Image 1 (cartoon, rainbow, N blue to C red):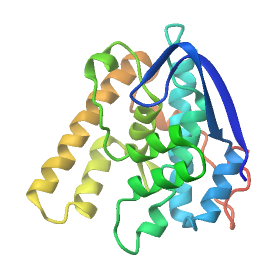
Image 2 (cartoon, helix red, strand yellow):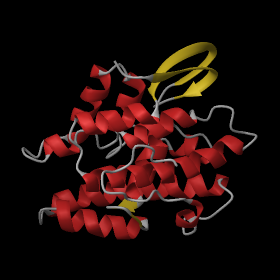
Image 3 (cartoon, helix red, strand yellow):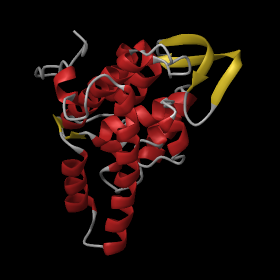
Length: 227
């Protein structure tokens, strides 16, 4: 029904798994397919624009990581972009009942035949695997790149992790101290990921915004968001 990229790579990290010494073929939706899925699932314009900025951030990260000569096990750029574009694919339909949009988004991606993208979508809020030793060795998965990129974007603005944390506490903390503790713990792990990422990258976390070319916001939102 939808177009996709088929990718083959000898050493690939998609989520928490590394596949080495054998070829693994992935079905990855291209940008046009991701935009059609946004339309199909009624993504609100503000959520769509947020997703595009997250994708820009994720792309800025993966392009530099792929340029690293030590980066033979880096995830594919197309997979990172698809995960970033679709990370909030279920957020609009989940607004009515306040259900888990990450889990629902994973279900949508699997329904359309994109299981590797589904793993990224399911873990863009909280990572299941926080592997500090792997981070410190300079190895990162697609889901970690998208997870981090999402934490750096408030609505359609690039912000620091501290600014994003304050927003999450204010809007989703519900005045519950235990919920606040869990949110802060999640961001503590994200800071550790950030520190490891920017030991590898040739620019700082503070300068990330300046590495990104942002999409414009036309009336009907983006037939070609990378133009």
